[in-house]
Length: 432
Image (cartoon, rainbow, N blue to C red; front, side, top):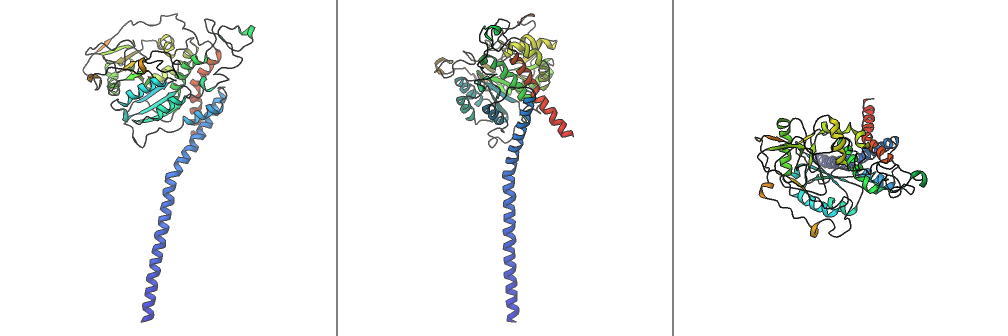
């Protein structure tokens, strides 16, 4: 009897011990699974990104793009990083319109536009992509401080600012100003006015074209996006109602103006603030707060040769003078009768950096924002007033120059092909 009782006690103790062991093992297994879930995807994602960068670089070499220095390669890797603030804004709105802010090196201006964006109604619903023309620490710090939405930074890895002693920057044997290449034994082909390239100037057109190709066809966040994307610059003050007004314009465009290519937040004439009518406006596409979809991008991309060979360092004048006219019909944009964005810049893209109050009066911008500018002020029942026979660049206009070097033109063409060669190869690998 006593022996049976001892056996039962031993069995019970053994069962308790086994239970403890099983529970402990389960806990260890759960911990391992949890650790793998939290760490492995991040590592694999990073490896995948680095592998993707290596592939892109190999295609870059095949396209005879400039040999990248270490800093250029680091910037290209940085472009593959995911957006920040996803912990604060884990999901983008289903119908969100991505905003692309392209910047150069005017920190005073950037602070103004970032502050204005922070007050835009609906900004937390979307993704803000900031495209940098090279790398400038003060500009980077301002963008890193953004907390009002998801934000992704991309840096032009072939910016002249990234290549201090070789093309697309300044090379020691480059021709300068009006040098005669034959007599000076220097490298370069002049523009139509006899002037050789200025890296600081040509970077404007290079950055815009690289950015467009990268946003539409290179970034995994946007290369599958077919809807509209809004483009703004570092000297564009954005009103609080801009995003909601843009959503209305995009929804009304197919009904009110099916022939319109884009939607604009501001009049084409940057000096105007709108007519104040109870009517939508259709006019020439402007360069302040413009948005279009992938269909329009495809039309633009097909005109890469026209864009890259037109002798003008301004991207917008190039578009107005040669790309849009090649579409065969007027390129209209739809906007409201009251502006939702204002161009406030008073100096060029590469002036003012490092100078106190160089580009902004009293170091600040005092923009009047009325109550009507804080809420959507576009009505679906409005008709459309069309501006016919608008002023523009006449047939035969050959550009203001600054874009005559064969190397710049080839680099421009390479930007148009880089992601297409890369994506085509990826498709072939996937199908095989």
